[in-house]
Length: 460
Image (cartoon, rainbow, N blue to C red; front, side, top):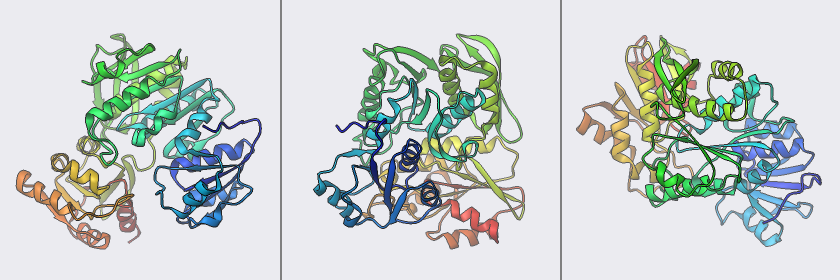
């Protein structure tokens, strides 16, 4: 594999530079004095920012973007092999790295590198740990899979040995990492267009755990059934977190305010330490915060900074984000696109002060929808009213084997849920505008562009 020498900046070209992770890596290299070029399918705020920072970006991916002066080409798993720019890159015989391989090489430059993995909660937990590092004034470098107000985007380039990033299991990309600290929040069935099922996913996380540096530490959810498989023969330090007191870091006396945000008593080794106040919603974020606390404590961050950072963390964009109010209806936007995440979000919503919950859900990918169809219905029935849009295809083609109507039928027939399938956004906007009442909670939910529905309602 090609190895970057960070003491000798070169010209790096990113195919798909506008992606949330790719753009962050490009910005890090720009700060390190590298020449950066790239391409993306469309203009965006991220592309505009990179241009202002000095990157040369072409809209549209085509063979002529691969020029002679490029020294290294970086690409993502989202790039199809028949992409003309990717094909030209292969033909050029220039060195190539995946996004994950580049991130792994960047990570190796930091003594205190933390990789946050898990099927759910990566972005929120990375945000929490980022806020803690900022409160402790350790000047961290941060690469996050969402937009965090505290750093004005998805990337922060610091000058210290602290580095925190998300570690995604899709295509096993996180196997390119060798962090000092690895976090595994949870393991669930997802990305079934790549993995054959839960057993292969568990083995993937096991491999990730074994990629730790020899003196590294695994911080892992101590309540998972698959825990013994993941840590078997792992000759590393192991630290557990969870809601039960048999975990090293746990919580008790959990209570919620009117907005559904928790305060709890932190236990370490079963002994009360201090009260922790969160400004994110739901019991799942209590668990996420315990993982962040464990990592910060391990890296010698004092408890005052931990408490300050968590209290300041309102989460990343699109994580139970309040967008505004229309006609007395509060609009929340959330990135949840897996049944476990949906259930966690709706459970958190129930803890807020509201009348009825409306969930406008946009399923993400045909593969996930088909594989987890009964689970989607079981999770969504926790809302009082459900409005389904057509499936967001993302990287897939419509096979005609599954539709949002299938979820609607299950919700209606099995759970007697008030549900309607309205494929187009303008239909959804008209429907909820007519039917939502004062003090209702309207949650736009999904990993696609469903956020636009709430934003459009707020403009009217």
